[in-house]
Length: 289
Image (tube, rainbow, N blue to C red; front, side, top):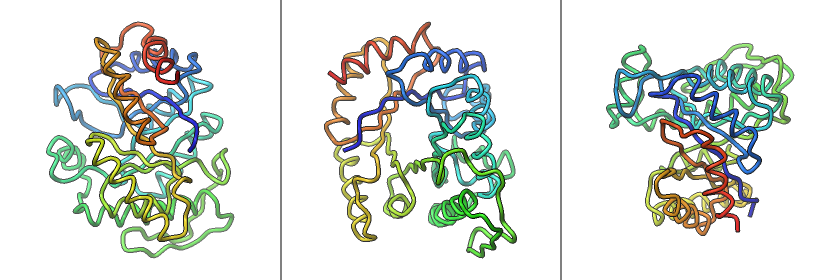
């Protein structure tokens, strides 16, 4: 089992830029917090639907330049929003800006049954394939992105969803052979993509029984392709309750007991002063005892 690591997530909606920068700078100075995450939406998915929200990769590059230690990423990039070859270039840039600290989080994108998420695609003129197609597109994207990060000669790719001619990327990421890949999702089709491509798998928002069942299914898919299931780190999110840290610690204990070792503590806004130090003292350190 990999060592336990804790990170924080700050959703870049209904907040100011300075709020995000403050929390990330605080976290960068707290060694118990090893990673930090934004998300990838173009319109708010909670609270005021007309409220402020920042584009994830642009903001990630900005906070990468203002931190020095934290591993960082988006939990997770929607593969629906950017062409994979463009996304590979964006991610490489962030890995270079951060001096090799990028964790490349990606997923198939929100389901059509979630109106709060669906509206952002319509509002930005983005195509919205059904979920089955979006998972197939995710598999092709992961293949193309890894090839762009690693291959030293131009190549063509003729997939169902991705078609490239003379594809080539220079520079390459700092991390070799490429940044760690985190894929989020729970469906059987997504888990097959996870087994093939991911270093880290994230699942969040489900009961512990469902979470463990999905983890067992991922194990099975890994065995089918002759991959060691233990080579994929299991990740999940735990929402932080500022008023009841004991409840948060109980939730962390439950996921640790289920074999999840990559824990992302989701912070709600407004963020208290010195929230990163508070999280370390009230949640992380007690949970590791």
